[in-house]
Length: 321
Image (cartoon, rainbow, N blue to C red; front, side, top):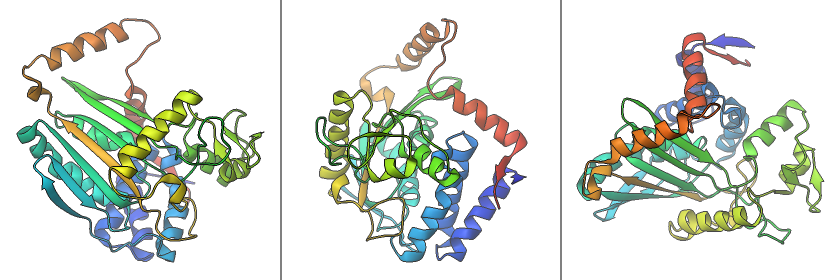
């Protein structure tokens, strides 16, 4: 293990992807996303993803030279084709274009098709909130959750992320998978040869397991049981049926180089708070934050990440070379 600054880590990670066949622009986008997740303590979406991303890149499951494109079928819609490349450059394109569109239209949407793993979803909406927008992201992922009462995966872990600006402070960021835990920590546990807690996942026979390999071959326990499974269905509709991409049960894995491109989707919504007919948003947010933070032992969603990020910026991160 060696300690690197965030800039040094990004440079080294980007070099790995360029060497494996990605364009310099795509490699930089991926490296920035993975290092940012690592810095925020989100290791399941951080550097632990490098081996599987490289395997998918080398096999052609991800097109490292893909250039995302966008069109506007309606004034409030930015339809993006990730072209079977990494998700991050396509999301970068959305984040460049959506703020001005939102200021014109009030509410805008960016469906992203032919996409892939989008990593720490909260980072994407945070970048929009930093520009004064309220933002939502829905992403479908390869099959991992069975319908409640079933045994075969139909839905993905299907993250939902939300961010809202908070005047004079970092945005409030909510980021959650619809499984009890995201698959990322299970992938990281498998790589380290560690067991996972009981209650996270079921094996292929539908029995509880602490073996991460058996968990990845089985199904994830949904957050909130039946309620989580129905929310996962909602995300499938928003990020796959609406976008025109694979459902979870059709998508190949994000975790290996087998099969064709996953062809999953994301849907990003961005709202200009001033479009609601007034300028009360900032004051209402301050009041809500105050009512939460005045209680001992509480914190706003996302604040732990910011503390870890500040530490990583000052001290760097440990990287296994």
